[in-house]
Image (cartoon, rainbow, N blue to C red):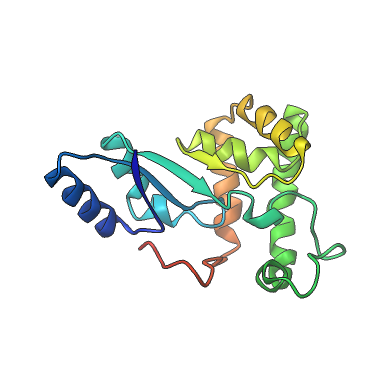
Length: 176
């Protein structure tokens, strides 16, 4: 299996062409993809992957915990970390999205963090979850068993879009 990471659509197509010339197939793409960073969808990457049998691995689905319900303006991320620098200034906006995530989580009887994972699965991606505890793996299993409705997906995306956030990190490039 050969894959690429953090590539835009033109680069993915170029990699696929080069590999095909050598009798190989591009099998995987791994990009940042979350409710607040859907650039791989907006740029056509997800559709290209689906059309060409390429597995899309989504990373940062939980935005380093920002979409887990664990952090808010009263409980910010630990100061001095890169993720605190990125997310603490926008926690007021993220609270709005986390509230919506919380309502859907309550409906399914799960924690907030499981809903963004279920959303990524609903979008046809395979989420990569950074786990530091056994409970995180158990949470991922619960997320797999959630089937969000089209209306729930639309509601989550609408709320996320209304926040107008750009969470592209220093190591990433814009996919558009």
